[in-house]
Amino acid sequence: MDRFNRYGIYVVPEGALYRAGADWLGWDSVAGKPVAQPDLPGLPLEPDTLTATPRKYGFHGTIKPPFFLADGTDVQGLDAAARDFCATQTPVTIPRLEIRRLGGFVAMVPAAPSEALSALAAASVEALDPFRAPPGETELAKRRNSGLNDRQEALLARWGYPYVMEEFRYHMTLTGNLSHDAAETTRDVLIPHFAPHMPEPFVIDSLCLMGEDAEGRFHLVHRYTFSG
Image (tube, rainbow, N blue to C red; front, side, top):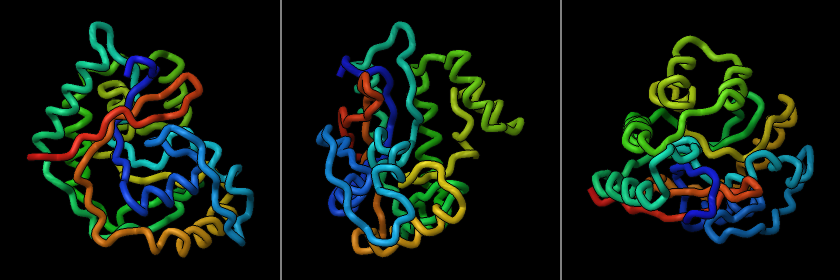
Protein backbone atom coordinates (compact mmCIF):
# COMPACT_ATOMS: atom_id res chain seq x y z
CA MET A 1 0.00 0.00 0.00
CA ASP A 2 2.94 2.34 0.59
CA ARG A 3 4.06 2.38 -3.03
CA PHE A 4 1.48 4.93 -4.18
CA ASN A 5 1.79 8.71 -4.48
CA ARG A 6 -1.83 9.78 -4.04
CA TYR A 7 -4.98 8.10 -2.83
CA GLY A 8 -8.66 8.53 -3.63
CA ILE A 9 -11.99 7.03 -2.66
CA TYR A 10 -13.95 5.80 -5.66
CA VAL A 11 -17.03 3.85 -6.59
CA VAL A 12 -15.70 1.01 -8.74
CA PRO A 13 -18.54 -1.06 -10.20
CA GLU A 14 -18.31 -4.82 -10.31
CA GLY A 15 -19.46 -7.44 -12.79
CA ALA A 16 -20.36 -6.84 -16.42
CA LEU A 17 -20.53 -3.05 -16.09
CA TYR A 18 -17.02 -2.89 -14.71
CA ARG A 19 -15.69 -5.20 -17.39
CA ALA A 20 -17.25 -3.10 -20.15
CA GLY A 21 -15.93 0.13 -18.66
CA ALA A 22 -12.40 -1.16 -18.05
CA ASP A 23 -12.22 -2.60 -21.57
CA TRP A 24 -13.41 0.66 -23.09
CA LEU A 25 -10.81 2.71 -21.19
CA GLY A 26 -8.03 0.19 -21.76
CA TRP A 27 -6.98 0.01 -18.10
CA ASP A 28 -8.16 -2.50 -15.50
CA SER A 29 -7.52 -0.77 -12.17
CA VAL A 30 -8.64 -3.84 -10.20
CA ALA A 31 -6.16 -6.16 -11.92
CA GLY A 32 -3.63 -3.36 -12.38
CA LYS A 33 -2.98 -3.99 -16.07
CA PRO A 34 -3.78 -2.65 -19.54
CA VAL A 35 -6.53 -4.41 -21.49
CA ALA A 36 -7.48 -4.48 -25.16
CA GLN A 37 -10.04 -1.89 -26.19
CA PRO A 38 -13.10 -2.75 -28.31
CA ASP A 39 -13.31 -1.83 -31.99
CA LEU A 40 -16.57 0.13 -32.27
CA PRO A 41 -17.70 1.29 -35.71
CA GLY A 42 -18.66 4.94 -36.06
CA LEU A 43 -16.32 6.51 -33.52
CA PRO A 44 -14.82 9.86 -34.58
CA LEU A 45 -11.35 8.87 -33.30
CA GLU A 46 -9.58 5.70 -32.20
CA PRO A 47 -10.59 4.47 -28.73
CA ASP A 48 -7.00 4.91 -27.54
CA THR A 49 -7.20 8.62 -28.39
CA LEU A 50 -10.70 9.17 -27.02
CA THR A 51 -9.81 7.62 -23.66
CA ALA A 52 -6.24 8.88 -23.21
CA THR A 53 -7.10 11.27 -20.37
CA PRO A 54 -9.42 9.13 -18.21
CA ARG A 55 -7.58 5.84 -18.81
CA LYS A 56 -5.12 6.17 -15.95
CA TYR A 57 -7.93 6.59 -13.40
CA GLY A 58 -9.73 3.42 -14.44
CA PHE A 59 -13.51 3.05 -14.70
CA HIS A 60 -14.87 4.74 -11.60
CA GLY A 61 -16.95 7.44 -10.01
CA THR A 62 -15.04 9.78 -7.71
CA ILE A 63 -16.30 10.11 -4.14
CA LYS A 64 -13.28 11.70 -2.43
CA PRO A 65 -10.92 13.19 -5.03
CA PRO A 66 -7.27 12.07 -5.11
CA PHE A 67 -4.99 13.58 -2.46
CA PHE A 68 -1.50 13.31 -1.02
CA LEU A 69 -1.25 12.05 2.53
CA ALA A 70 -0.92 14.70 5.23
CA ASP A 71 2.17 14.87 7.39
CA GLY A 72 1.85 12.56 10.36
CA THR A 73 -0.55 10.17 8.60
CA ASP A 74 0.01 6.96 6.68
CA VAL A 75 -1.90 4.68 4.36
CA GLN A 76 -2.47 2.12 7.11
CA GLY A 77 -4.37 4.74 9.09
CA LEU A 78 -6.27 5.80 5.98
CA ASP A 79 -7.19 2.19 5.31
CA ALA A 80 -8.50 1.76 8.84
CA ALA A 81 -10.48 5.01 8.70
CA ALA A 82 -12.02 4.11 5.33
CA ARG A 83 -12.95 0.69 6.66
CA ASP A 84 -14.60 2.23 9.73
CA PHE A 85 -16.44 4.79 7.60
CA CYS A 86 -17.86 2.16 5.24
CA ALA A 87 -18.93 0.01 8.17
CA THR A 88 -21.47 2.73 9.00
CA GLN A 89 -22.85 3.17 5.46
CA THR A 90 -25.87 1.60 3.80
CA PRO A 91 -26.27 0.91 0.06
CA VAL A 92 -27.30 3.69 -2.29
CA THR A 93 -29.71 2.74 -5.07
CA ILE A 94 -29.61 4.60 -8.38
CA PRO A 95 -32.72 3.66 -10.40
CA ARG A 96 -31.06 4.12 -13.77
CA LEU A 97 -27.81 5.17 -15.38
CA GLU A 98 -27.43 6.89 -18.72
CA ILE A 99 -24.64 8.13 -20.96
CA ARG A 100 -24.48 11.87 -21.56
CA ARG A 101 -22.23 14.54 -22.96
CA LEU A 102 -21.06 16.74 -20.09
CA GLY A 103 -19.54 19.78 -21.71
CA GLY A 104 -16.66 18.42 -23.77
CA PHE A 105 -16.55 14.88 -22.45
CA VAL A 106 -18.80 11.83 -22.30
CA ALA A 107 -19.73 10.15 -19.04
CA MET A 108 -22.08 7.66 -17.44
CA VAL A 109 -24.27 9.41 -14.88
CA PRO A 110 -27.40 8.81 -12.80
CA ALA A 111 -30.49 9.55 -14.87
CA ALA A 112 -31.73 11.74 -12.00
CA PRO A 113 -29.89 13.39 -9.09
CA SER A 114 -29.50 11.25 -5.97
CA GLU A 115 -29.54 12.96 -2.59
CA ALA A 116 -28.33 9.74 -0.96
CA LEU A 117 -25.29 9.56 -3.24
CA SER A 118 -24.47 13.24 -2.68
CA ALA A 119 -24.73 12.68 1.08
CA LEU A 120 -22.41 9.67 0.86
CA ALA A 121 -19.81 11.69 -1.04
CA ALA A 122 -20.01 14.63 1.37
CA ALA A 123 -19.67 12.36 4.40
CA SER A 124 -16.67 10.62 2.86
CA VAL A 125 -14.93 13.90 2.03
CA GLU A 126 -15.40 15.10 5.61
CA ALA A 127 -14.63 11.85 7.43
CA LEU A 128 -11.33 11.21 5.65
CA ASP A 129 -10.18 14.82 5.38
CA PRO A 130 -7.63 14.50 8.23
CA PHE A 131 -5.55 12.33 5.88
CA ARG A 132 -5.45 14.93 3.07
CA ALA A 133 -2.42 17.15 2.65
CA PRO A 134 -3.26 20.72 1.62
CA PRO A 135 -2.88 21.27 -2.13
CA GLY A 136 0.25 23.07 -3.30
CA GLU A 137 0.28 26.29 -5.28
CA THR A 138 0.66 24.45 -8.59
CA GLU A 139 -2.44 22.37 -7.95
CA LEU A 140 -4.41 25.38 -6.74
CA ALA A 141 -3.49 27.31 -9.87
CA LYS A 142 -4.54 24.38 -12.04
CA ARG A 143 -7.96 24.25 -10.38
CA ARG A 144 -8.43 27.99 -10.66
CA ASN A 145 -7.56 28.01 -14.34
CA SER A 146 -10.89 26.32 -15.06
CA GLY A 147 -12.73 29.40 -13.77
CA LEU A 148 -14.28 28.91 -10.34
CA ASN A 149 -17.22 30.73 -8.84
CA ASP A 150 -17.06 32.06 -5.29
CA ARG A 151 -18.51 28.92 -3.74
CA GLN A 152 -16.19 26.63 -5.66
CA GLU A 153 -13.23 28.77 -4.57
CA ALA A 154 -14.36 28.40 -0.95
CA LEU A 155 -14.69 24.64 -1.33
CA LEU A 156 -11.22 24.46 -2.86
CA ALA A 157 -9.80 26.33 0.11
CA ARG A 158 -11.64 24.16 2.67
CA TRP A 159 -11.58 20.70 1.11
CA GLY A 160 -8.80 20.89 -1.49
CA TYR A 161 -11.17 20.44 -4.45
CA PRO A 162 -13.87 22.73 -5.86
CA TYR A 163 -16.44 20.13 -6.90
CA VAL A 164 -17.44 18.59 -3.58
CA MET A 165 -20.39 19.02 -1.22
CA GLU A 166 -23.22 20.85 -3.08
CA GLU A 167 -21.02 21.14 -6.20
CA PHE A 168 -20.59 17.36 -6.39
CA ARG A 169 -21.93 15.69 -9.55
CA TYR A 170 -21.40 11.94 -9.75
CA HIS A 171 -20.09 10.69 -13.09
CA MET A 172 -18.04 7.85 -14.53
CA THR A 173 -15.86 9.44 -17.20
CA LEU A 174 -15.63 7.72 -20.58
CA THR A 175 -13.64 10.18 -22.72
CA GLY A 176 -11.31 13.12 -22.54
CA ASN A 177 -12.26 16.59 -23.70
CA LEU A 178 -13.66 16.55 -27.25
CA SER A 179 -15.24 18.90 -29.72
CA HIS A 180 -19.02 19.17 -29.53
CA ASP A 181 -19.57 17.01 -32.61
CA ALA A 182 -17.01 14.38 -31.59
CA ALA A 183 -18.54 14.12 -28.12
CA GLU A 184 -22.05 13.76 -29.55
CA THR A 185 -20.95 11.06 -31.99
CA THR A 186 -19.01 9.17 -29.33
CA ARG A 187 -21.97 9.26 -26.97
CA ASP A 188 -24.25 7.88 -29.67
CA VAL A 189 -21.86 4.98 -30.30
CA LEU A 190 -21.34 4.21 -26.61
CA ILE A 191 -25.01 4.12 -25.64
CA PRO A 192 -25.78 0.81 -27.40
CA HIS A 193 -22.36 -0.56 -26.50
CA PHE A 194 -22.89 -0.10 -22.75
CA ALA A 195 -26.68 -0.55 -22.57
CA PRO A 196 -26.64 -4.35 -22.08
CA HIS A 197 -24.26 -3.97 -19.13
CA MET A 198 -25.97 -1.13 -17.23
CA PRO A 199 -27.99 -2.61 -14.36
CA GLU A 200 -31.35 -1.23 -13.32
CA PRO A 201 -31.11 -0.34 -10.53
CA PHE A 202 -27.43 0.43 -10.07
CA VAL A 203 -26.62 -0.29 -6.43
CA ILE A 204 -23.58 1.22 -4.72
CA ASP A 205 -22.77 -1.02 -1.76
CA SER A 206 -19.02 -0.49 -1.44
CA LEU A 207 -16.28 2.09 -1.83
CA CYS A 208 -12.71 1.54 -2.96
CA LEU A 209 -9.43 2.96 -1.76
CA MET A 210 -7.40 3.62 -4.89
CA GLY A 211 -3.69 4.39 -5.17
CA GLU A 212 -1.82 6.26 -7.91
CA ASP A 213 1.46 4.70 -9.07
CA ALA A 214 4.57 6.48 -10.34
CA GLU A 215 3.17 6.50 -13.91
CA GLY A 216 -0.07 8.15 -12.78
CA ARG A 217 -2.22 5.01 -13.07
CA PHE A 218 -4.68 4.13 -10.34
CA HIS A 219 -4.90 0.69 -8.73
CA LEU A 220 -7.35 -0.89 -6.34
CA VAL A 221 -5.90 -0.99 -2.84
CA HIS A 222 -8.96 -2.27 -1.00
CA ARG A 223 -12.72 -2.56 -1.44
CA TYR A 224 -14.89 -1.88 1.61
CA THR A 225 -18.40 -3.31 1.59
CA PHE A 226 -21.03 -1.26 3.40
CA SER A 227 -22.26 -2.89 6.59
CA GLY A 228 -24.28 -0.16 8.26
